Length: 420
Image (tube, rainbow, N blue to C red; front, side, top):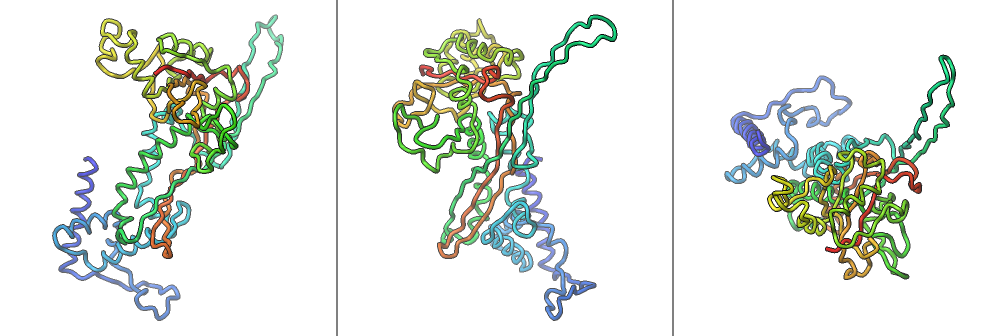
C-alpha cells in the first residue's frame, strides 16, 4: 500500500467515526479519583477514548475532506484540532520534553524524517554506518600495525611490537535554519504548510550535510577554502554556512596532508589513476573507495573515449547511459555540492575566478560521520511581530581516523584545476 492509499484509508476511517458521532453524542464517564481537582467539574470527565487516537495531521486531513464536502467536524474533534494547532503555532517545541513539543514534532514531521534525509544524502551515504553519538564528543582511536616474526623455536618469545596509537575527537556542531511565517497568511498556515515544509527539509538538509562533509572549513578571519583571496581579502561572513567547527574532505587535502592534491588540467582517463595512486594502500580495495565529482567534470568525463563507446564499455557506455558507474573499480558519485573553484582548488571571493572543476577520492572506511541530535523542529510565535518562526536544527560531526597532519594517512585525495 503506497503513502496515498494509506492517507486515504486513514481519512476514510476518521470520516466513518465522525459520521457516527453525528447521530450519537460523545460518551463520558466519571474518573474514579478526581486527583484533587476539586470543583472543576469539566476536568472530572474524560472524552471518549477514540478521540485521542488521532494526531494533528490526521485531524487536519479529515478537516480538509469535510470542508470539501461542505461539512464541519464535530465540536469535540474541532476542539482537539485547534488545541494541537495552537500548540504547534505558539510554543517552542523540543524533542526531549514531553508536553512541550516532543509529541508534536513526531506528529508533524514523523520519526523517520532524519533517516529520510540521510538516505537521500549521496555523500553522507558513503560513510555508513553513521555513529549515533552518546555525547557531544566521542574519542576515536586507531592502532598501528603489529609486526610478526618467526620464533627461534618452541616456547621462545619474539620481539614485542611497540604498538603506536592515535586518537581523534569527534565533536558535534549545530547546523540551524529559520523560516518566518506571517500570521496574516492564515492562523492555520503552519499546519497547512507541513507537507511542503517536510519536503523542503529533506531536500535542503541532505544538501547541507553533503556540502559540509565535502567543503566544511572551521577557519575564521579573512579567508578559507570557500572564501579564498590570493592576498588580503575581506572578512568571512559570520553567517557562512561552512563555519561548522569541523573540517571536511577538501580542507584535509588542501591544508592538512597537502601531498594529497594534484593539478589535473585537461581531463584524461589517467587522472583518475593518478588520484588512486595518491591513496596508496588505502585504494587496495576499490569498492571501499569513492570518487566524488562535480557536474562539470561529469560532463567532460562522459565524453572520454574510454567510457563513451559501446565497443569499449558495452551496455555501460556513457553514450547509452549518460552516467559513469565506476572507474577502475571505484564507484563514482555526482554531487551538486561541489562548486567550481579557481586554479588553486579553492572557491575564490571573486566569483568570476571560479571556472574549474574538482574531483575528490576518499577511502570510505577512514572517515566517520556522527549524529548527536537528529533533526529538531521548533515553532515559536512572536505576538509583537505577528509571525511564527519555524526553526530547524541538527547536530552533526565528521572526523577521520589517524593523524590529520601525517602523510602516512593518505586516505583522501583532491584533483583540482580541471578544465571544464
